[in-house]
Image (cartoon, rainbow, N blue to C red; front, top):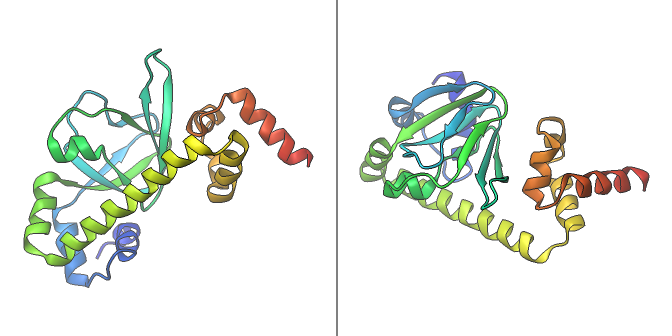
Length: 195
């Protein structure tokens, strides 16, 4: 098994233990991709034909609001998935964009390759279901956080869960992700370091 496959194998092992043979089944159907910093992985209003497993790097998910402003909704790091799930599974155009914030290396599967794994290997179907559950829970938690937590609470939770992103992501994207202005983010950061 190629060494560059290990982040995906580690990620998938969180959902089910895979034998060397089962890992090889995935690797044989996966395509390797490299995206330069700033390059689009998924483009809004285009088809989304692949699900990407991040091997290394960092990506930002975002859409444009009705005023044309970018709204950051997610960050995908090593071991995470990058796709527009609705577009990938149904064939409708993508509703958001994903951009590489750093050089990004992924292994990806087409819908046909993923369906083959699901159809021929019960464990892959289980992994797919558990990954879907995992991301649904994350989506519910994020939605709840945006609805009921204060800006300070969202900022503190982000500092706890992803402090390293402050060194890798422009602050305007973090502010957007938190649903606050850049000025509010600066004030919250100043308060944290003053206290």
